[in-house]
Length: 187
Image (cartoon, rainbow, N blue to C red; front, top):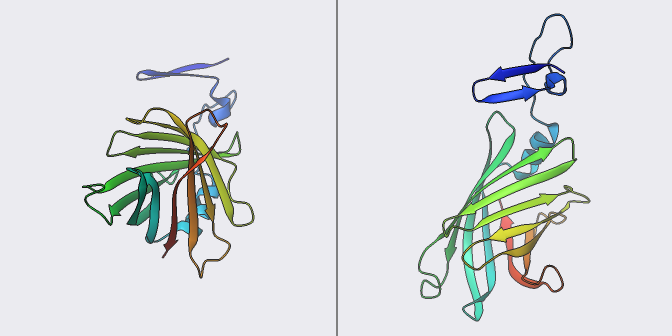
């Protein structure tokens, strides 16, 4: 097993990362997974959404949002900036801001997503990807409301009607699920 030190990082067994075995040791730059470029073909461009948060202060709250996706970090990550504007400023006085990063894990054949929100919340989720123009993402959310499980379903089967997005939460480790939001997004 070969060992190479680079600054603070020690990499062991670099053959899996493109280091040639024997002779001249040459590191090849990794290439972004094709799945990311394919995802951006459908996601590219800004989206405008209208939706409803369920159970906000005991009742539903309407909102509008914009979603701006782009690739970053050498094409390895899809970065989405989301600005959610509540219709009723009395129920929620400020906008909800979300910065999300998603990449494709080629070894696990899964999408991995991390979201950070301006209320300190964090979401970590995975997905098997798009099937029949539908995608389900499952994960965990952490924040001031405690830890909970989340499911987000995205349906792009009728893009004339818009992309349908629905989210659910579970506070009892998946025994029961409660609708959290639903929205329709169009380019």
